[in-house]
Image (cartoon, rainbow, N blue to C red):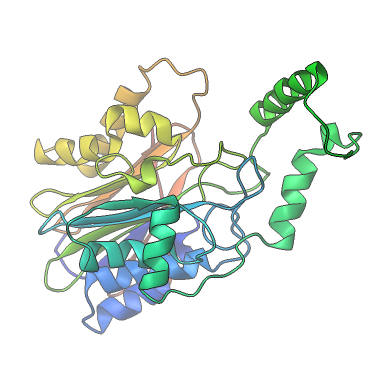
Length: 316
């Protein structure tokens, strides 16, 4: 496969890939293409795992993570636990370009930076996402809000019951998870981008692999780029995206490099073990992906594509 403009993405990236490849065909940079594609994914109100409409944390607040990495320089910009700003991928780019002394901003600091850079705040919790959140709370719907009083022993029992309830929360039916987008432009530059609202009902302040270099995102133009979605804590523990790129550096083909990482992650003991997926792109335009469940796919568009092409991921 020859090098040339190409953009690939995880499931549900089809909301943004056509815009990304259109930019690449016009000679735009991989950075512009990845940002544009992910912004459209962040704006997709039917997607409750990224951007506006993302499912909230256990306190009912939407917190977003995103990152970008440039292959030629390995420059990295990211934000984590951002509230009230609908395009974390663009704030991550601002960190990369305008705050090069840092790689990652989180929480209030990231929000302050977004404000300083002129980003417009917005309500992220949509009515539909709020309904899904309240639906998940249904088991405790008998509770009646009372007056503010001093804590009593029963309050501790209630708190423990609430924690147990949060631990029982499951993602809603339908496609879910972080969105990855990787692009190679006509100059040969590669960029990897990741955006997510993270696990639904997560503990407030939780930051997953999507905001961390080497875990949810890694890009080295000498060998390729990779990104992960799914159980971010497992990817953090094995530095998943970096392991995939290391496999490419050893000469493994893209599918093999992805599967090798998942095999390593599968050896970890984790009571919360869940689906983990990864995909990668090489400087000569080869691509591959792997999952721990059958039926998983990823999306590809090249300069000659007339529509998003869907490829099956290899299965661990």
